Length: 234
Image 1 (cartoon, rainbow, N blue to C red):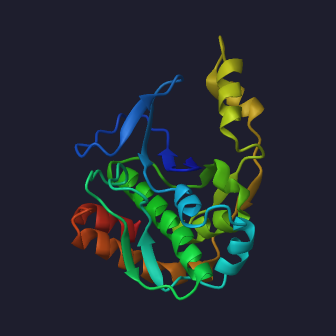
Image 2: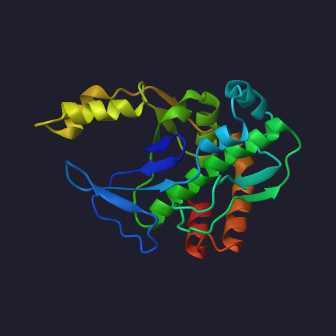
């Protein structure tokens, strides 16, 4: 599951406790048994509010579709430091290349967050977390169907948007599960909505840009060689 709001959080389910010596991945106990490994990034939709305050993001979505991929690849940190998919308190925004228009800059930021999401999945997979299948998308960013489709394309995997993707639904499930199985309660209350499959031509189109960003992050020492290799092969 990916929660994209101001920041990005990835969370999964694992039978075994995953241990990350670097400290980027942490795990909570699952009430029904097993573990909930994941991580919280400083990258997220907050970069859009920072770069385009008060703007009509739906209109920018439409314009951004003309830049796939953008002329620049970005790891869009808004402040110093990163927690996940790599832990580096000194990390700063990385930009490789240039954008020529406002819409292209916006496109580069959308793509950069999706690249960070892909790196996060690779980080979990490197520790042994199961990351195959589909990814459930929740959070405020699900209001942008274009961004959801873009994320499917960059990740190369199907994404599903629950009918009610707000965090409040999760709180309602927890409240309703008192004295009974959390899994059963969630199964009754959470309904699947739309599934977006990756578009094959877009998957190939974004691959070169993603690899360029991986190389740039590795050169700066933000990514280990193991994570970099996992990112481009998974």
